[in-house]
Image: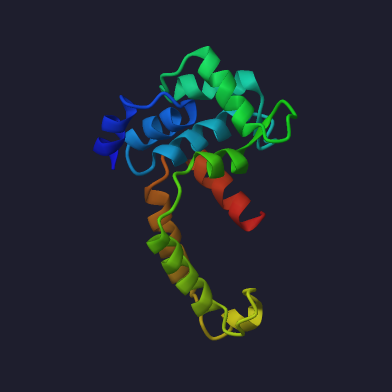
Length: 164
């Protein structure tokens, strides 16, 4: 994927596609890596960035775009015109579209969990499907931990995921 992204990067003039391809050219965690940089820059933990923070994050991640392209990107990500961009909206907008095959496998996993078939995964659905021991839970997060560079980011991720 990284090689293809580098090849396509030379052909595109669209700033959003240019940013996406530069992230993908950094490998499988490229988009997550930019998200990680933005979380570090977000010193007040607002989960949003203003334009200056956005620019600093792009520079820190070595994204090669000019100021005009950065301004255009910021406008694309600032959906409500508030002058800030939300991390989640940013990452959703930046991610490449998923193939139908991926969407189908995700739906299969969802349907497997949704035992009652009501379109919502509830405690009743999960009962009997998952029985996780402390050791299994720790092993799972040890695997996640291996792909995260710093303790600070890992702790932020855990706090956000588990609302701690």
